Length: 297
Length: 297
Image (cartoon, rainbow over all chains, first blue to last red; front, side):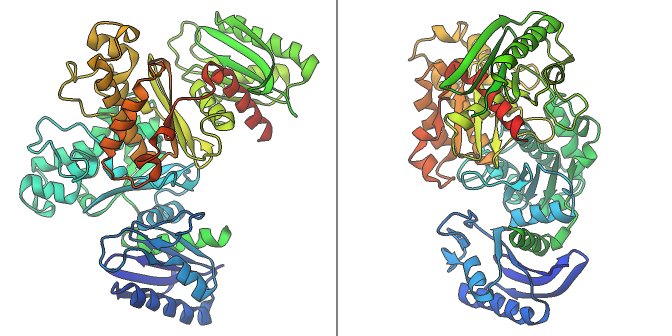
């Protein structure tokens, strides 16, 4: 069995690990994301030390973004226009490749998490699914026809435009680019701005949640008619409110109004719209899944 | 060079042809779609006669729908729940396969047209694009990662939900399932119902067109952020109004508001949102492209 290295590169901390699967993580370290030189240097040093013990066949990086993950691009492996101070235009994956001498897989953190769920989690055995995170931002990525979505750049599903609800006290939404897009209507900060209190302090029976479920359901409806995914995984901080799941499922059925004649939507929606199963290990496992893919290609 | 057979199976007429490419259609016949037995029987007889002359290596069917194009389905090759009298639940592709003894490719008419544009037209060389027809209905299909989209069933991009425009005299839309979806706001019949006259009789400077372009642009914006296509092809009767193209392009740029930092959208949108190039031959050429794919697999 091959051993891989993984880097979960977050805006505040890095996690580096070696292993082959969720039940086989052999070593792991965490350190803060300071300057690019120091932080990437620590990752390089870690994998050089690990190489003497277990020889990882490849390294995967699931990184905060935006990144350039296009294999044919001259800037492949870079973190590009990030607002994180000092990190704009940072050479990343190529440094690891040069210093360790093994193949490196490189993608966004959410694409990594999607790949991890495909390999070991809620999307196992599917070829077309979407992984949506609802937190400070809303990001959606996934796989179509058995490969991670890419296209022109990459999906930005948080910015799907939605019809405002007549009972919304702020139907104009809060996205600085698009106002009433999914992110502008339903991310964590939108919940807080609309109701004047932090999302996690809103009681379960507060009308905030019905409206939140309504907007999430409209976003999912548009994703379903556009992509026809076989399953949708909803993660991120806002979805820690597990009571949202049944509300969202009901409203997706109502919004589609019987138009998609599929048993998965009409009768088995509990297994169609689901939480992720890898939980807070999704980042590093996604990176290991990216390494596995890089080793094969 | 291999020769293929193609059937453009429309709700009112069938076109059967043999050939290998747009400039190499060797024979073609057309006949009305009457009963399934008579119509499919004529197609079978045509290809049996052609087999003696040019031995098509495979036959492709680009059919009106809904159809079941899933290769692993027991009802693969059927026209399923169509409202066309007498055609519901019609065995189709398997009949051709049995009677002619060659491989048969089978898909929707719009997937066929998308594949034709990929093979010889506006989507040549791309791996992720969308083909949207705006006519009596609105249908969107396409390719992601180099393969036609399928997923759970198939995309239904006409039913993307959109925010109504404040100046729309009928913001509720006309879709019997969803009201204000793209189809309910922007198909040909919606234009006619909203303005009380047929779309083709509305002058170029009528406010109908600015509103039509607005809704099409919102639909395209949602498709762009969800799928990240490398190009969007707009066909169908409504898009015969070529003055819509620049209006739609401007409004897509306005709706995205600089968020997708891609030169194709920011500076080269004339070659990003385009008409199809195969025109009224798209149907039969799409069918031939489906045959070519079936022969290879």
